[in-house]
Image (cartoon, rainbow, N blue to C red; front, side, top):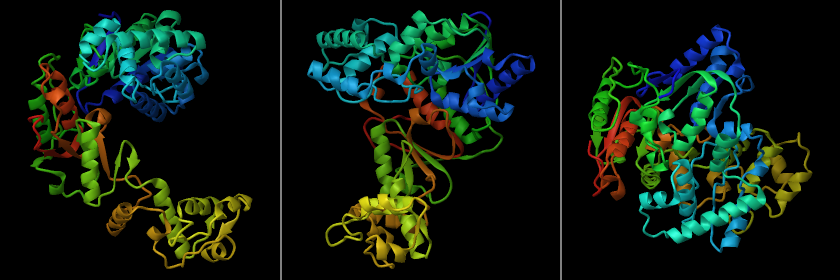
Length: 508
């Protein structure tokens, strides 16, 4: 328990961020300076939302909020680090060469990223185990035993750990996890009158050490989150630390998102969680709808905003394939199903067809994607380098491109015949255009995992019940209940359940 603290439990859609910003408002009204207010989280999504809300509420810029940061960002800036201090792609290549093994390591170049564990090749599983041990404040042996990875070898884990420590020592480089450890060991935290720790249920033990160090130099601390939505235990999260962090507990008891029908289904799931803080909150005063289907083909998604969620990235890709087969425009992991450069090139060519003048940048965008060899060539070969000599402020019509810059295509040529596209891609885009989809706008349909959608919401939500053997056969099902609870509670109006036909599935 931490003195001078309060735990704010925010069930789905209960206005947790609004409540926290109001706490900031009260502090400002008391005359607390902006540089004496800390708002931290492990995730960039939470911090970006807090900065946006505070900026809008108090007419502030991000520079006005020096301690609204992810824990990684706080460590990075607190240690006075630069990007050159971090393990880079080149460092991982060199380490791979030294070990005679392939490692990707953490390849992000964003110092403020909330990354937790390395991703990448099979050998990165050893790196994940090393980092997880540090994040959990556990020994390598315990981490190895807990993971039960029978295709990994402990002697190799020790060898990689020792070699990696030597490499970092010799080069002065750090990983994101090292950065947190160094902050805990070396840094003097800022003196704060108010510290808010958002999404605290997802902090790993090492991050809790960092938070406790901050709290020790803060006058008032608020921890905010929801143990029912603690879905990152795979990364080393210990939800018990969150549940025990304060004696004073406040529950936000009104959801401004969930309709009654989805609320009832979500309550049926959340009450299966054995280890949780009991809490009650009310749904919205409208019914909404819940419907069950055998697959996505049964659902009419031609109108409105939709999010389709699955248990794993592999399942999400299967959902994306179904949408593609239906000729629906979607995004997955933030990327649209039609590359933006392709959509822009189509728009550019259609503009030329209508007599519009285009700039040099647009000419280059079109020419880069147009075939220049073979029977389908629409641009003379060797034209693209010549564009570098063109005036930056120049404008071009279809006719001037034909006369001066090697355009071969007839004006009536279909936009899709102007681009290097595979047969299947051409067929798919044509189907989208027949539906009058605007390919240069963000798609109405989003494909996501439950983990990636945490903190989000949508009018229409589709939840797939497919799961994996390791999830279904885990003797502790609390994690599974939490994951599907998160999925079910993203909906604002209409919830669609896709019943699984697979052996391993979650039963609602």
